[in-house]
Length: 297
Image 1 (cartoon, rainbow, N blue to C red):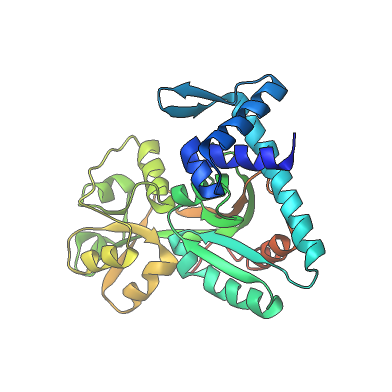
Image 2: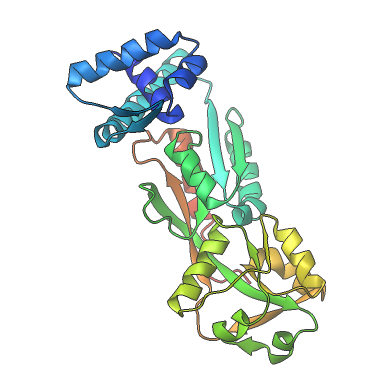
């Protein structure tokens, strides 16, 4: 088997389609199909099941992908390092919305000063999308909030951040100053979209207290949610670092939840089969140096 077979298999796995893999590799469909058949014959395994016109990866195929990813990444890193020793390449970094607005810009600025030859490409999105990008090798690493259980990613802690219950400036909870989660859940909730780390954090809190809610608003935009709070349309749970300025300006107020802990861990994450380059390691070291206190006041 050759590296060419590994690359073809990897593209079929990522696209879940022989046709789309052939298009991306600029190959004919029969050539891609033949390479897959050669690979399956060689190892005596079915890497995909053919369900009508759709491919479904087998467990053997999932294991093969991890090996293929490691092999191609290692080879590409060797090629890049030896062919152009001075050029450091590209670092693809993802970040959750909170970390993309907060710690990442400063980290990226520092990193560029220290490694001016590295081109950094950044994607800011919710945690669910970032995990998928890592698993499909569209990102080298990502900064996430809240442990991504069940994703199969490698995680390393890089600090903590605090969440806060944010309410309109003239609201019963603003006057009370303190409340339980059940008391807060009785009011209209303005929430981040499903798939975001912030939403997952709140859903887990509600589940732990046996509470269910129907959101009044769902939005991928923190600013849209804060604007709705300012207009008195409901209350929200957001990273304190993103809501602090609105509270300082008197556009909203903070209510302390007395029966739950609103601290969550930050993580740097990458594919477990990913070859950790010196460039990745340098960025990870910067992230760890940024590890601050659990309460971002």
